[in-house]
Length: 114
Image (tube, rainbow, N blue to C red; front, side, top):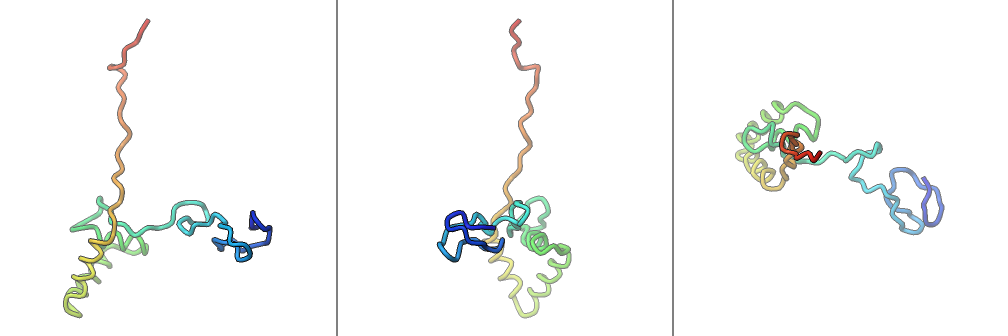
């Protein structure tokens, strides 16, 4: 990749040109394929209490049962660390956006002028 301002060659991972400071367009929130990067959010469809364990499992790509077992173990040893961690994550982690289906348009309600 080349800087659009000064023309020097830059590695693809750089977000700014080290020569002139111009942004390269790599915001860091997208993967190399252009898809949005992983975000730590709480899924509402897979939750048991608040969705914290499901969100952590999805972010790290591991089984949600393993994360739940680790949280329960941390709740008892060291005392209440898991509980405090869970409550903090519950407050800090945003919910997934609610995805609604597209509105259904029935053709019976449309007036046809002939």
